[in-house]
Length: 473
Image (tube, rainbow, N blue to C red; front, side):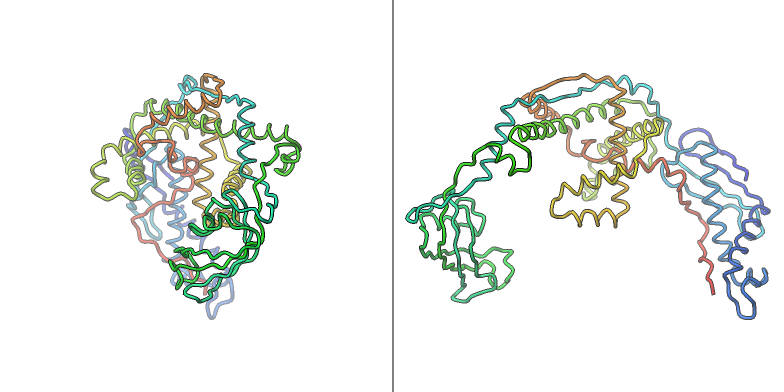
């Protein structure tokens, strides 16, 4: 194989590749030997079909497969030899090709620009730790207790009031007709929460144990029996119990009911949760600072094809007119994102950052925990969508890069209280850029982790028509 770089200036490169016919014929011989043992033709024993017969029957298909294989292998090798990282898929123009002929073709490729990352160590950012006062944990625990009230039986003549729990049986009708789902036993409602049907529990205020009460309420839009949607239903209720809310006592027993050892452990856990809530938000703020610093780095030229792809992402869902009006702004945003992505990727490669399978699965589990009750659906989604899993890998890859930058860059460590953290976050929100320019809302590049392998897995687009694979008769 002979490789010649046609032009050396700019990001657009043309590479001429020449493979002599002797080498091409050796590939053909290898392919014929491969299919020889599996082809069955009438009148010939398996593996004994003459080469000329095979060539007459399958010549075009064999050459098509060989050509495809050679193009893939030699294109990857030519790019590696010239140390070219492609920004997108190369295009191939076949100049000479055919059976018993030399192969000559041109690779037209846009190269990713060279990126200097030496000054990353000079980046400055704020690194926060949050000091949580014991009072903050106590407040949170009281809120939890408030939302988990105990109930005790009220006296038989006590009238139900808002906040009380009413237990009742009911039979419901619409225009005197019973309907499916119109019966209930031991139904419980906390009055004032309006969780059953709109206005239902307000009508139970003042009822007593053993009392009969008729309640009228409109059936909702999502009621299963479509013919009764938005119809007024009459509920004949029998009140079986009225219970008064009892303030929960915050003690070790309360803590045990929440799954921890004692109240001290609960306070420690709640303090950590509050800390994590603010720390995660402040970490994102630190990341934004780093990204804004990376935007200032110099990159001589951004490939036009990458800008075009990113603009399409930014304008997705917009009308052509709106996209055209904001074209200039979208291009500037796209350049920033691409630049940051290139820098992060270069830093990741130079530091040999990789995402292990264990790290990826840990992130999948994290996503699953964020959707309680839908665990199987989330797991199935990632199992059936390799692109989604690849995107998740990109997220983990990027976080590992940012964390390493934090280690190498110059951090200004700050310990803040919860109130100070809130103030910092509120101020940062006020200073936020417009929605279409929030670099951290979307990934700085599309699957930057995949760029490391793109040069190895490039699928060449040829100008020659692809032939069908060899059919085995």
